[in-house]
Length: 184
Image (cartoon, rainbow, N blue to C red; front, side, top):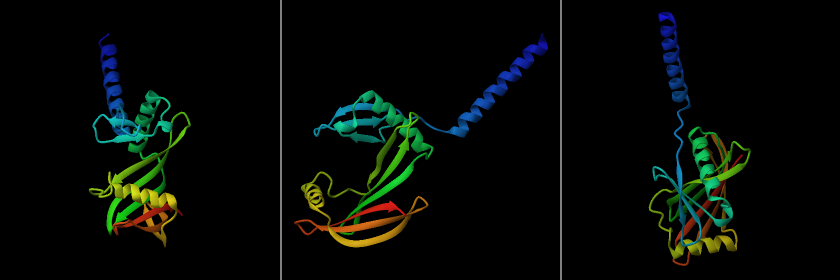
């Protein structure tokens, strides 16, 4: 009887050690997201538990708030494991200062759905954010391409991307450079 108790204790200790090792190997912290509501523009806002991530999605991107919340949590887990594919890089510079750099990643969810997510954002104070300058730049871009400044190549996340750069001038003389990079 004493041998059985000892064997059981050894087995229990081994199971705990193996389980702890498996958790350490995976090392994924599942980030919880909460639905915050809608902003003034009607977009849905989701905020991570640690308040480090804010995801804003338009009405047509959210059909079921709870499903979207679960999707964001799965995407966070995939992001932490780097199980994603970089599809595109967008950069904006104003008067020679990097304003924003956005990465567009493709995620494949466990149910087979593919979701593209824009990640990143501002590098500095983002001088155009929330200003009429930003609206003016968006209108110029919507009206057509800016001055073609050609293409250049850059290595991003160990892949070569080809960037197409355009220049826009706002009414106050602000120079805006817009670059979009696609994998070669």
